[in-house]
Length: 307
Ligand code: SF4
Image (cartoon, rainbow, N blue to C red; front, side):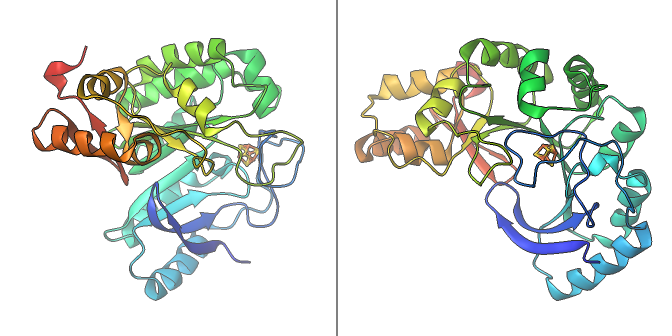
């Protein structure tokens, strides 16, 4: 049974070896419209989860072979926080990981649970999904087990954020015609202003989904990102080639950055060559600052100039 996969090179997180905590079959308490795995009935258990010793033994072998790996990613063919020995596993990973960072990719469903928070607090980078803030939208996009409520998840993330010292990334995946409305994003923005994640990865479907749903364009992601005022949004989209390049003056660039930080990729996608050269002059003069969040660089106004 192969529990370790990769390495995979991710622009968002670096060169990573993955741990699949549900290697036999999909085990997830959601049945998201956009899932890359096959559709399946939500469940609250991983059947036949691998033992902690087995995971560690396979990981050690892989780490010997792939020494330049930067990140060890805890994930599953489904939801990793359903793994019954998660806390024990995280402790064991700390004894073998050396200089590698630990990352977990979770759908947030169990973040309100004390035992899940206890394990996740010991991980360097926690990526939690939050596609909607309203119950109706949440049920349409993520199709969770009936017992799971979005209000409990949001409260759980807020509490976790207050105590977690590592890097918190929130991922929003936008599905055309479902969670791509301004009203939903305004609600999400309110919640995210309170959570204050270190980074928001805003993306759309880019691999064949479980159900018949469609992605939104880069332009729509950019419009939606503008509702997330002052938050560090990283737009993750492969469809950015049709974006019309913007010719902006110095005050227009500063005004755009006053609204929210832009990632290096946004700048490459949005700015014309002339705008890029004005932007670099502003950066050199210190009128714009660069900030690194994990593997993603953001550009923002110096804190004294933000409102
Ligand atoms: S949470 Fe992840 S694994 Fe579960 S259904 Fe959604 S996309 Fe698939």
